[in-house]
Length: 463
Image: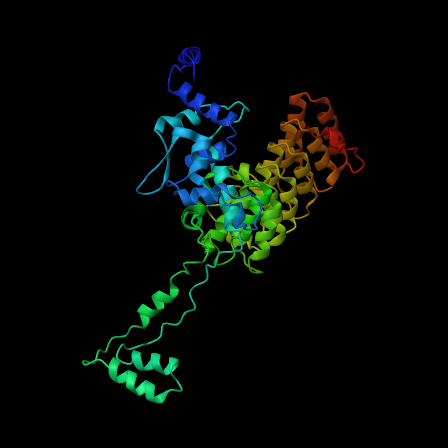
């Protein structure tokens, strides 16, 4: 500002409170070309410990989804980039060289609905997603060697060290060797093994080699970030699952591989899950076991297409799953109204399809009628192993619910053989409910031994 008028205008436009001041700072910086502003702020908000300047530099240089590491893309001056994008709202700790927000109120402001001039804002979920995308991409670079060291620790006693060194460097000059050994020979014998010390020196990184700083953060916190986001994008999920091979930057322990499978399962990411199943040894039943426990704990939300894929891919003995304190998986599929999963379960020999529900005390068909899932009901009625003959209440409940579609399916199946007493009860029930269509069907069925094979049944009747 070079004139009094400019100063007066600036004073008139002073922000009235902290949020207004923060917004003004960020908006002005964005107009000046703050291309990294949102990513910097998201990384600071999402980080589980303050990132160092070097870690921030590498994280900002990651192109999400691009697994080819290119050192040429690294920011040349990260300090300048931080200042240009966030101004005084970020501070760098001089001792720890970590990047932090100026004050806790800045984070509160960012997460409390702030939108920049482009309409973009920051949420905690969005920040964690950005961090996870960067971590998974970074961990997928082919420049990390996480294998255990193959350097063999030699035994080198300090007393014999001079002769071994000279023997390797002056092998042909015997006279010189002898003279040098007289000069180097210790007056007092030292029986000390220096092999470990030499190995430690050899294991130190080459000063001229490339050092990746964000690696430390990713190895310590990478998996934790994947736990807190609700969903991964399909491409990132595939990269993440591929990292579950042993000895990757994300450690690759068996528990981590199980976490990856559950992550793919909950995200309903078929491509990622298919890849993980490929990575896991053939015949390994743990994948289905993990996901079975997942949909048992949250049956209505998690019995999804992933379950169907697992039912096809894995040979898991459901007899070991169904027990005195756990319902059959068939019930969870019925409750989730997942017709595809029901069909796959009915095709298996290890599912007790007539087991009564431990929760409600009903057979699978009764539960399907209660949930009014026509496709599932049809599959159960057409399954010869389902007992609908000895359980007269199957027709009774269909009539009591007024479900014409199910009544027709049962009467057309030819599998009902009701004795006089249950038949009379059902006739009386149909008469009481005053459902003319069902009543006429029941009367007609009673006259034809409860079998009406020529009934016209339309799927449109399934409501």
